[in-house]
Image (cartoon, rainbow, N blue to C red; front, top):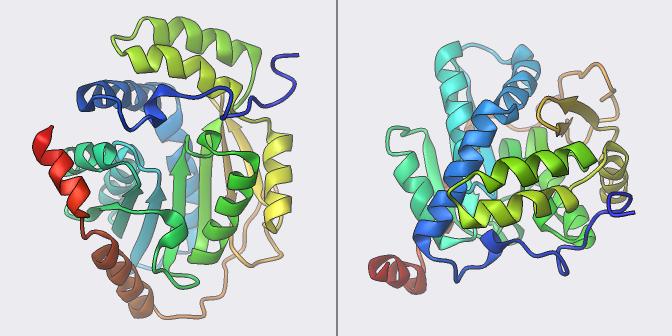
Length: 283
């Protein structure tokens, strides 16, 4: 019965969501997440999906990305590394509401001028429809309530112009047992607690499809990957996305408009609050 239904985040909290956690503990937990992403399929799943979307990219174009709930900016770094290897030009806004995550993400992206770390709320971004070419998120949705997931998917569908890529965990007995054992070996107290809880709060492909339907997302592609992961991807505002093929969405704005909007979003939301700046100085 435990795995038949998704656990409510309100009754199964994760320690990493508590802003009172020490900065060092948050960094330790995110180091563990980085390791899992790099060794157990998270990065590979994202790259496979990027390859699909990039088939229609033209040489010399700059593609803009928004990563929501960026944590340590592991996904933006993955996108940047992939783009550099393929010769693509990208600009990425790494968004997180937690000041500790933004502080750590800035440290992790010093060598990546194409990544800008932004502290902000995805629901309050001054971003117009189609502001970014692509919107990404990884292991973020399971932190939300059912209503929050639907609301978030609607926002993604609105502000993405070419594609949305959502990655998260699959709720399986094997995934839970693996997380419980593997995370217990971690030095991170947060990871040891949160790993198994994350699986309980995660999804089946059928549940993910139902969230998309409730959000008005049209025929998303959902693929299962190694490491008990899935990717849910779609092209906003199209009727032609299927399980196996995608067709290029007709562009309704120019590249310049997209880049300008992304820059405006980043510049507007990167202004730190006094509270955040004070907290960073005290830590």
